[in-house]
Length: 298
Image (cartoon, rainbow, N blue to C red; front, side, top):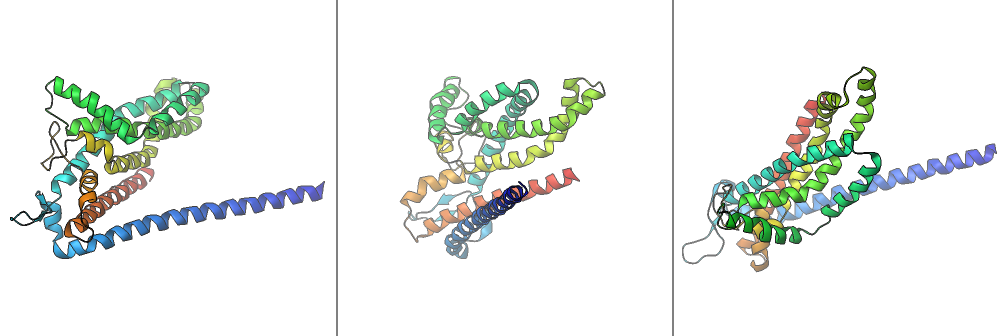
């Protein structure tokens, strides 16, 4: 019996070692892939940055990659503004619903009900973006036009559709965070005679906020990189973005023009430069939110 127990213990230790090694290899491979993608995009964008200054590229508002007699222009300020505006509004709209839904699932719904609802939320996350774009074009944009709110696709319509797209991820991650905090705090609060919902509002939810930040960052990055749905709804016009006006995101710009860009041309490298700026924006936001999270933890 003792030998069998020692044998099982050794097998368990070997299995733990193999699993730990496999996880480390997967993490390392993921980091290498992301680094290679970043390096490749930077390599393709480098010829463009040699020809066009960064200030003109980021601050310019005119995009004319083909010379029709008046020269070429490469300015993505409007595209950056539309990307940030659309993504920021989408996250704001989604948070209004996600926090309430997460509180219901974690603090009001039973474990059985929560396990029944989660698969439907995951199904919503698995709907292709082109379907969201089609529904947004037929329902949201048409509603805005019929009510006289907008004349065509607009930033607000794209933000509302994006909010629905990132909502499942926010609800799932936030509810799981609240459940973990609730298991630690709620028994102590009830032992002190504190009302359940008072404890949720003044103890559990504030303590869960710091765990929401990584979810919000990932949702923001997801919204910034969304292409097809935004492409179908936002209007695709290189103008200064307004709430009820048209706009064009960086991802939409790349999707619209990359297919017609000649490989090795200045337009081709300019689109890679736009993708490089998009990745840098996501990394900067991620780093800033990570520092904010560390300050909140301290």
